[in-house]
Length: 298
Image (cartoon, rainbow, N blue to C red; front, top):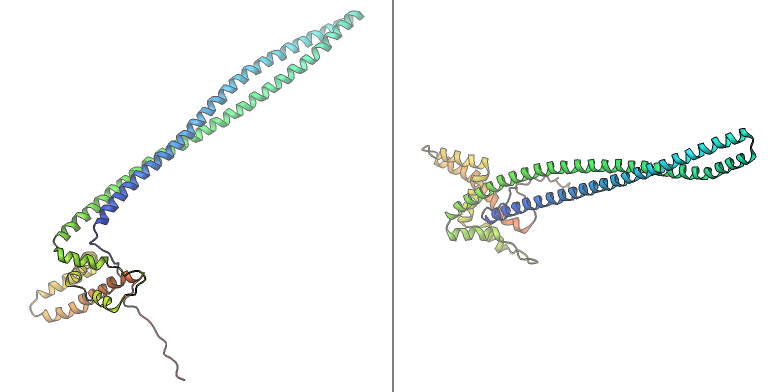
């Protein structure tokens, strides 16, 4: 089955050109939108890294303060223990009592300072881990932005190149077909256009007279089909050129006429059937081969 192409509806070329340009713009917009989202994510991760580093700086200062308090409590405890040891060595009960009281007073202070320092240290360590994660997120976001930018630029350049080339071909085809159609008379063009644009009425059967009229197309329609086959079918093109060459040899007229009826006219009839019935269904098949089993006699 041959393709039922309507080369007389040339406006489709301009519509396709506009569609491709629209697709190009939409693609660029989508790429820009995707890249913008990736850059926003990168900006957010960078802001998070900045905040995390600021919190870490504060935590380090706080940890240093708590370390100083813990060292001061350690020093007080060490002094109190030394004085208690000296008092015990002196055997003076009043000195021993005073030194023991100092140790008792320094103990909770040392416990509190040590706990606060440990908490400050653990908080600083958690913030360091947070900064590490934030830095990792920034690296991933930067890689994503760079990759998307590279891919989008490449894809846009390739799409623009392909669309420019494709639209150039479509424009050339439109110009060539416009020139071709300009050589056809308005009457012939209308007959051809009406033949290709015809569609059966919805929910209404196609009558035999309509089929008859379509199969008995005008010479303008037949010539248009032949010209289309000559341009699009290399084998048909070669066959026509070969017959034209044979016709130039004197005495070959009868032989060539038979070949024309056998090859060219038969192909025209087949294509006419395809184009006549194509609007009536989803598929048209010609030259089908069917094998039937003979019925067994009773």
